[in-house]
Image 1 (cartoon, rainbow over the protein chains, first blue to last red):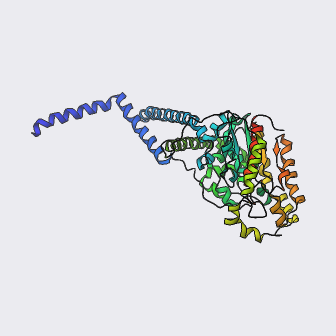
Image 2: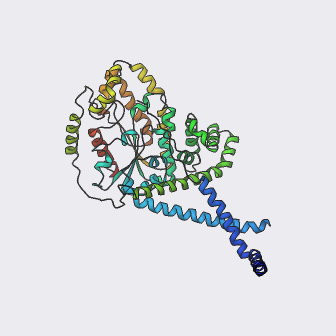
Length: 60
Length: 405
């Protein structure tokens, strides 16, 4: 059983390694990585606060 | 290795920026579709943000009016009610709440920037603002908008002198600036005005502009969220607002409003609203008999920082090439007589108002002939009655149609 799986895993690893080495694929996942950072920053700090503290106007 | 990361980082940044620009364009389109439905509403984001105010100035059938609590009190003759179906071709777009004084309005309008060029805007003043040293810290903080203050501080359309004088006044209200060290620093540089401070100001101006851009995007997002919430609410926002042309018979409307006001103000000698008199005014007013005098009143009037702020507002509007109308409610003469301030002393307010506004060539309506009118206001402060609203509405209608006399 183990013997039968070993070549498959090796092949898969080699395919993945080749894929990672491909400059277009690398450009794609790195772009996604940076986009994820920017989206994360947007979610963390993007929400504005337009609220104001309450008060009772005493100017009369 | 570094070069390997530069291309995807730049690509991600480009895609991200394009999404933001697209999102903002979509939000602006949505704001444009719903602006007429939103016009009569009063809510915090309308005052604190810029997206909706800016959109209102782009609409030829909306007349923005900046004022304070008088705009938030429901009344059957409130401009938003009387002009609800655009009888003479427009309706008002009220902005402001209690404590929205001249310095806050200057920041609001500075945020509109070049979109204000050639546009009409009505400003409603409350005389009591000018009867004290300056508006309180809490009221200012409760109206302060970081976005609007930033737009003023980093404006390239308002002259350095106006920004400098405004910064000096804004720094007298330090609390709201604690949340924004850059804005505080830049206001200090503006206020200082030394050559070194000027260098610092202009060196950091791009950073301030970027920070303002972020605040503008947040404003669009909040506005988008508000409209989405309202669309799905219990009373869904309908973008199709009916326009029904009609002739307004001002004298008939005035007679009707006066008659109604009399019925609602007959339980006290001042002409105050019956409910307000019973619920909150009576105990305080009774204690105020002869509690003031002309000397103190005139001293306070002469020293009020609100005159500086009104002058700043007019200078800012001139820089932005706007067409303002200054409306001032009258003083509630009957009440001020009772507290010990004579009509002659009160006249000093109307005189000074004209003295400050007229050099700018801006029309000013102070309703001084209603100083002794018991029914123009509903309380000792500055809240317009049914009758008062008819006078306001008539003035706004004439202003919109270039028919002010």
